[in-house]
Length: 161
Image (cartoon, rainbow, N blue to C red):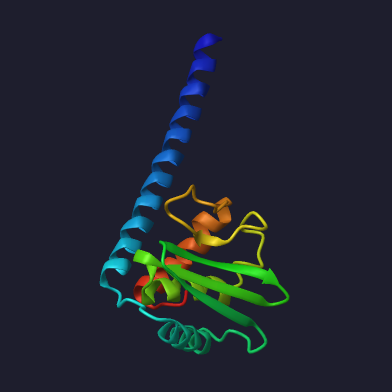
């Protein structure tokens, strides 16, 4: 009897280890792609350029006309988009994240409805708001394994998954 229980525990342990290894590789792959985009993307130096990029992405991604998208260019390291209800959004970027690829990434989250889905904990922004403080993002598996990779693929390759 104990040997049967031991076999079951070993199988469960291997399954858990496999899931952990997959998750670790998944996260590492996303980090590498994001770093590539950060390094090779032109910087956004002022709010005029930020507004131009948001309007370009709005048109390219077919964001509905009625959706209001405000923006902030911050001094500190920041990269997030937030939904306030009533089809009102805000994109915030700053510091090392103030570049064109991050704007593309955040606009994809908005256009694809990631904010309105149940893929995140309500009341939290999507992204890294201030890297110096603890990350305020609360993720669910759907966000981590579906929404975020889609936005990253768009950010890096320009493909709409």
